[in-house]
Amino acid sequence: NAGVMQNPRHLVRRRGQEARLRCSPMKGHSHVYWYRQLPEEGLKFMVYLQKENIIDESGMPKERFSAEFPKEGPSILRIQQVVRGDSAAYFCASSPPLGQGHTGELFFGEGSRLTVL
Amino acid sequence: AQSVTQLDSQVPVFEEAPVELRCNYSSSVSVYLFWYVQYPNQGLQLLLKYLSGSTLVKGINGFEAEFNKSQTSFHLRKPSVHISDTAEYFCAVSEVDSSYKLIFGSGTRLLVRP
Image (cartoon, rainbow over all chains, first blue to last red):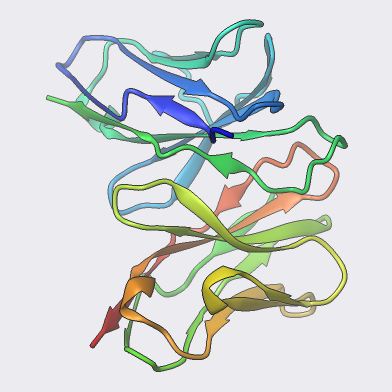
């Protein structure tokens, strides 16, 4: 009964490169949430997705960041033309569909730590 | 819009002493409340949650929290801490019957000393 799986766990990119972070939700979960944790800070909400739909992207930077959750495969958080300020831990969480056994809890992965040189 | 305030960025305490980590929230609607723990270089683990019912909630590892609606607080307590409790603790809130999007506080680092 695997939990939320994120990969890669660590990613190093040079300024201007692209970063792709992947998240496979728990079995039976169709909702995915992405959070960013800057060093010594709390988690900031970025985006909430269901399969093939972005429901809430109010926390996403307007440029360079995008997210998707296709019908098949993991959710992807994509950062284009990375800058040093993008260095952070990116956490994915999943939950079952609203009203279908949802207890309010989000289940978190262990995070992907992006370092931009 | 909701917000969560954790006033203490760091709480040092001696082993076997009691501890309270404070959390206050702001919301115009009913909320669910959560405490998560994060050990170094790991993800978040749920300690406990308040959805409804009894305002005193018991969680894992001997932690408990009390929901106080009038004071909009959800403080976390443990009567006797261990070295292994050293970690970052996050309070979070989500709107009832909404997207279950969690809004987190800035975290409190609990440092347990021998």
